[in-house]
Image (spheres, rainbow, N blue to C red):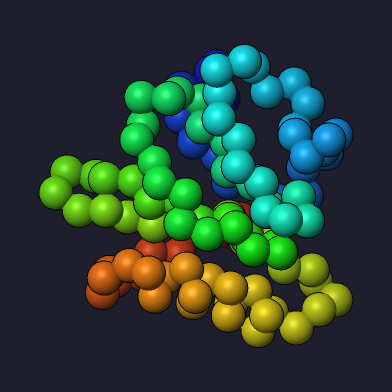
Length: 109
């Protein structure tokens, strides 16, 4: 993340030990879902965040951007399971926001 000047990453299925992702430098913040299958990693503490929700397979934070708060969610969905459970987790977190727009970005590999 440092090499490419990336401040925040949403990850799925990270290797964890004692509910932490090994190798993350001291001072970086990591927030993991209850099952550790989804996480958000922040390289800098200069980004103010509020943890909105932590569910079985998702974690959601809020951060101010200019004059608005945005929700950022890392969500894991197993290819063999129905995605509706994870979408319900996201919907519960989104209901805590007054946002009227959704921005979706994902990479599947």
